[in-house]
Image 1 (tube, helix red, strand yellow):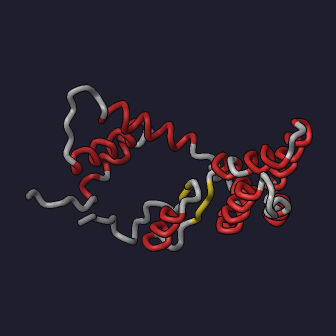
Image 2 (cartoon, rainbow, N blue to C red; image 1 turned 90 degrees about the vertical axis):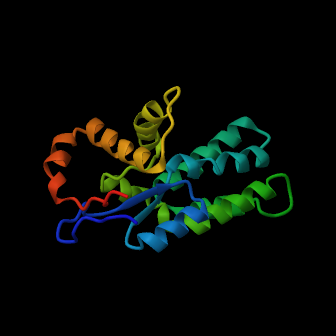
Length: 185
């Protein structure tokens, strides 16, 4: 059973989840953090554009121009233009499957792709920083040769490493007496 800080002392003013668009991720976020801001990773979103263009255009210049135009629409938050551009190729043809996947993806996640607003608010729109943090915090410490971790100790070590690497170690340890700690088993 997890422990929470008292509600009179919020941990964060806002909670943001950045994901690849997988439905199961958003379902979990909605159940556990319904007030959280949900953002689809920019790079994952753009991965749906090139397959449509590559299947639709034989001419390399036309293909690249279409990709650039659709990416610009996405960057500027014009999801209608992105969906319409992909929808053009949903009729039977070489690009049909990729186009249908793209239309479904962008339609299902359009409310998570307001990139101009996210950038204006200073939110991350790419998961690279987070993925690098996971590598630094988890992989380098927990995956050392010969290490065997139980779940509880791995979580505590990851939290401590995150606090240390983010410069929050002194703040965290000075508040230790206010944290609800689990009783020893």
